[in-house]
Length: 84
Image 1 (tube, one colour):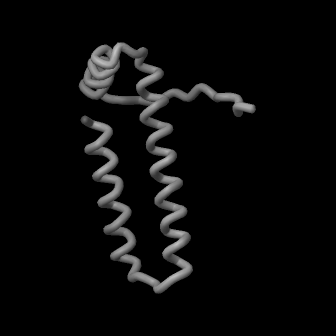
Image 2 (cartoon, helix red, strand yellow; image 1 turned 45 degrees about the horizontal axis):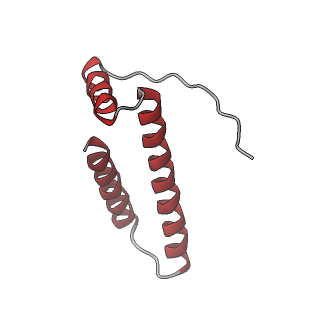
């Protein structure tokens, strides 16, 4: 059974909205579908990162700065993938 969805409002700059609308047109999909897919990708990626971190916590420990750098790199990679 699918969970009910809750509408949310977001604010984006006019230039970002223009880009999003163009990407949606290029994909021949409504903007809300594009945003939903991007959000689902982000959630899956974040959940995978959390699970990965949980597994790593079972093993040897890493310095906090190294973990922060790794997560920051993953965020940068996600953002660059999302921008493509």
